[in-house]
Amino acid sequence: MEPELIQHLRNSLASSPRLRIGLGDDAAILHWHDREDLVVTTDLISDEIDFLLAEVDPRRVGRKALAVNLSDLAAMGAEPIAAVVSLLLPKRPPQGTTLELATKLYEGMLPLCEQFDCVVAGGDTNSWSGPLAISVTAFGSCGAAPPLLRSAAKPGDVLLVTGQLGGSIVGHHFDFTPRVNEARKLAVEGLAHAAMDISDGLLLDLSRMLKESAVSAVVDLPAVPVSPAAAKLAESSGKTPLQHALSDGEDFELLFTASPEAAAKLASEGLLGTSVTVIGTLVAGEGIWADHVGGKRLEPQGFLHQ
Image (tube, rainbow, N blue to C red; front, side):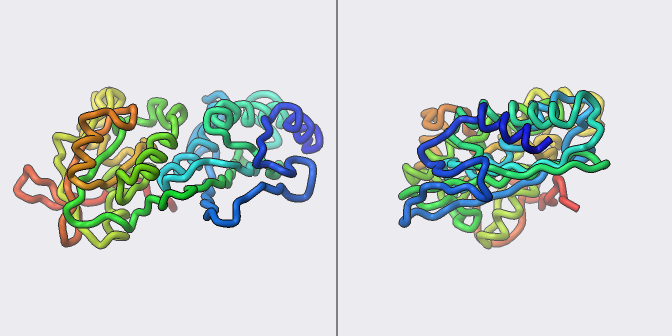
């Protein structure tokens, strides 16, 4: 199966001037600049944990596998360059053959590769009697811009988020667009101090940023942008729309901090080309606090990886 898949990919995957040697050799060779840092991230997603293969088009699964990695690059302010993809394929997929499944997974990645000029440089495949698992490692560069780090937030910063939050299980977790362009603008123009993507829930991910930066946050809960999907889920989940927005996870929006001056421009002037909402401020101390309910401390909630 692997030789046929490699040949198919050599015929269908786009090339790039950055890719000197791609599929067909023992390793890929990327043209690299000596003075640029290499930004590297990897993510693994698997059937029955991150999706149900029997209920979803494999193309959407392939897209997500690449998109979550591009979202991590975006969180660092990095421009995607290349990715390597490893597939652990079920010998008996819910539909079609193993080769057909692998082909569809790659087909789902191609539009994102083209959109963000990210070439698939290689990877590996194997098959077994268990569920599908996909591991993608993505490479990027911040160029001359400093990276956006979780540890760079400081007291006095304003806390902001792109887009809307909550209810991603309805479909957003498959179809989101990584905030690569928005994050690059933040990094290149020096508009943000700290940043990360929201993959495990707003409160949980915010707590991680605060820990790395050794600061505290006061969150304006009514300002948190709640998605229509979160409101829809709340009709039957027993949670409020806001609770979904605070803890659902897999929003893959940017959570970042900026100076009050930069935050005002970002929230009011549409500099990123997408909605940006101020949701709080950073202060000295520790923990996450709500500013409208008597200073109640908010517990980090979200998805914990086992």
